[in-house]
Image (cartoon, helix red, strand yellow):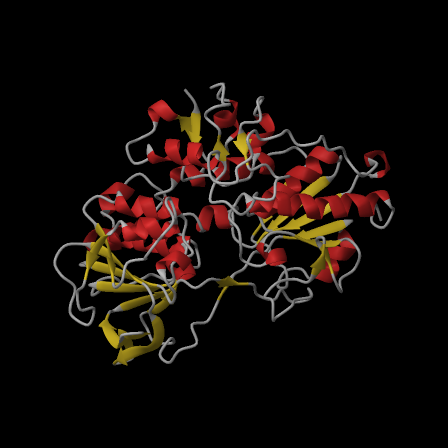
Length: 474
């Protein structure tokens, strides 16, 4: 028997480093790493030791014989990755890696980390392991956690377990946490640069990409980030009014779009005991919602969601997940297109009122042209496709087309790219000792685990600078 990696995988590769038989791939040194939905366990090599499950920060690894019915497909998904066309006959061990910096030349640093999300925590952990540095976290909110706390859906408790990793790092004896401190308001980047040997900015991407269509400013037009903040209990979140909503249209097909669709359409009873905010839980219990329409501009093969998140929708109790319009033709076995093609097909007129019951409807090949208003609120959305235009009645439009970085006063910012300019994590145009990690560094791409290798690159630059005497005790 073997273990299998399931939907919750964060791809931070903690499991790879503890596996005694090299059965988990792709590894960080393999070209596929960062480009697959999850990591995979080779059942032919796995010795059932369980080390990977113990190391996993998000509870995504389990023995195949204890997988829930909705997870059992992952046993085959893991196995198929090692028998796919082009897969190596036998994955090889990576060459050993050794530190490239003489750590004996790194003095005892004073480091500030701005933010407490996954990227900030991974960076601090790398610094603490390699040096005798003291680390001070500066968090704008009163509660730490960043995206791990306010960006992960409450019905994904396994993924939210990454907060335990955050807590462990924050309790380190050489760590100080200062909450309620906003850089740019309470302290400037220049003041931090003068006070600390190094400053790492892990401020994420707190803005939203614009839909750029008429009517997007209407009441009832909200970003997915605002909805996620609402149901995760972000202290600055505005309430989302569902009292008169029968149909929600979600523009976008990424994992966040599917999270929003699942949270809104699913039975609120399943959220009991989760970290769903009380206000959101009450609204989800009492609303009259019937339908969530998920709109994609391109075809099903080009949807930005993962197969595992789509599978989760098909197991949502009391909710039909269907596809309207033309099904994908010739989709490859096991592909996202094949999964969409397997959904029930409907040819309903989306300009009509939603039918009784609850369902999630995927509509591809639909470009958003306009949000139609009545009395200052959203009343519909006009979509355009090869078959013409249709105005879909809706009381709530959720724009799930991506985050965007925002400028921090006093820190260089590339407005066109929506991120802080850098070279291997060193901020370009800032004093020596200024670094950036996470979405603020690379833009809003990649999940929680992607921040680990991202942070390691930045910390490698920091350690090289310290060893070279470019930064140090002042």
